[in-house]
Image (tube, rainbow, N blue to C red; front, side, top):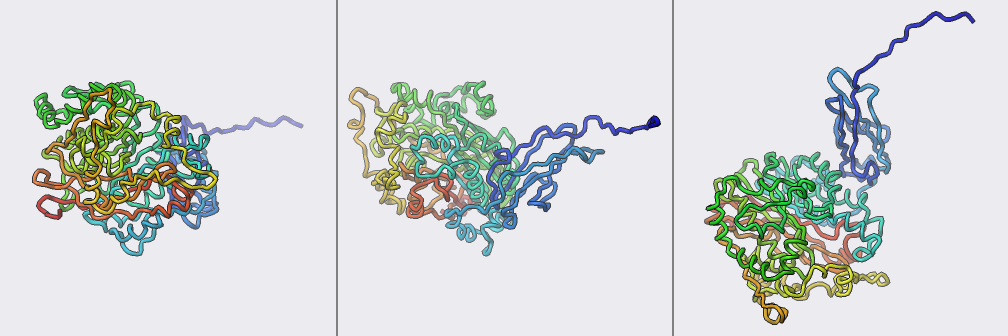
Length: 595
């Protein structure tokens, strides 16, 4: 054939086209996809100003130009896909898009009896009658406005995947729960659905895996209008606490007002600045030690403050005289406390600022004396932080205190003092050692491993009998404290002359009130342990405290019979071994005379 004439071929060459560098979503598109649980995709781009994300349910466009989508009931059995297009001015991203599909089809949210139990309370607690749990889960804009001058607070130990996954092979704590119900791809979206359903102003979470915070909780709550931060324990374990606040209720907060403190340091720094291990804090992403102190403080101010907190002397003396206490508190425990200073959006009876603390105290059943010292240290630091303004700010203290209502820590927070002869928090002062936390010791002493897989029952004798009659009201609880006085000499090792100190909160610290009018029968229902461990405490207004909080309601708690249907927690319908505490407060001023 004759040779062809040469042809001109034109190529459209684009320098540095918009490019997607990375795409992040929980479990890399392999999570279980439930109705009413938001999905979030986060992208990083180069040579682009932004990325447009289009969501598809089946073959239909479900949402355009948003990094989040909440599957609906009519999406069930469909797969969710995303089309991600990086763009910049002058380039519409044509030819640069990428498509991804979630592996699992949309399913109805599994039945969650605790959410069902609380649906009516959510409606009647200020939410317009007739709002369904679905609308609450998807986040009604009207809810907070309807609640008016109220503040809703949630504290929730969500059971770290670190511990749930570790137990899958050991069968020590959760042998009653099927593996399919323990995996994070199912548990964590259920937990998130519950958290969102409460439509809270403040959310305090404990036992949060760093990866779960970064990959699921933070992205989803940010998409729902929350701001927050995470603090890892001072340990090699990648879990800690997360705190979030609604930007509908509070002004945006700077990072300098979000702080984390290792509890091991708060009792040892004295009147000198704490020199933290900077490399360790940098690795864990915490704030620098220079931010731990009010820049306006002078040495004289610190001396005056130190004198007011006189029990600090007794605690430090105990640690100097008792090597094991010092070792456990200063070298072994890795608990932290988060604190944030928030500016409420304007309203009647609101202060300029509030300070919120979130913590998870040491766990061991024999270490009540460690926890009461941790609680005192938290109050001390909280008092410092709340005095950074023109007048002391009101406070909220939330968390898993690993302490029953008769414990030293709760006694201190609600009644301001712990004397060694009126409370048994010092009972194991000279018996407890760090090695008591080994699995072998815990098994030998019946702290774990009590589930009978044949009868599929829990030995409820692990519930403290002295506590069973102390749930009705404050008066009976007070009687329980004083009816269990401890003979310090009898409970102390003969080889030791160490005398436990009295721990007293000074007058400069406000009186606290529990967000729950009645003490819950339990907040933790595990195979080996049934107890109330989780609390929300709020400061009360007084002559010295112009602002405070008035508890006005709490979400109903499940009965033990409800949990027993599934043996214990977690289970197929209850994704954590703890029950979330949800309390409503009213902003109050001292002259309102509501107390």
